[in-house]
Length: 153
Image 1 (tube, rainbow, N blue to C red):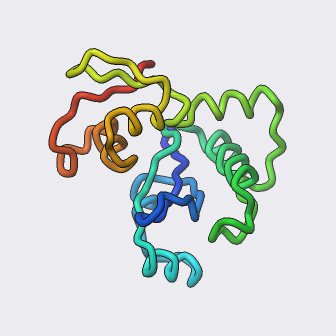
Image 2 (cartoon, rainbow, N blue to C red):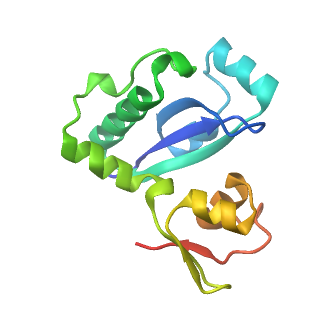
């Protein structure tokens, strides 16, 4: 069943990633069942959720979670474990996970008829924060004033 996702929690103040997790969309937004370190980080800096990849199997989600924790470094995160039940990553799976990253995907702006090679480029050229662009890409109409950005699949 492809019902899992991998997410990052970022600080609102500076976009720094402080937690990597896997599970459901509900869990990605949940504040209960978090460590004191996580809670103090959120209380001090605020947070937003960034979905890295969705529609994953449990094995895929665990593997991506472990890969991202390894990439950021456990000591730089609020995570207590290396995640993913200690999966080993092949070079092929590392490449595939990087491709699934929102920053590695191309984005089209249908209003301006322009393509961006990455999330970072779209943010920079449009002058928007990551949260604004991610809300538009996710179709979150409650927070985005307009929706004209789409991932190119």
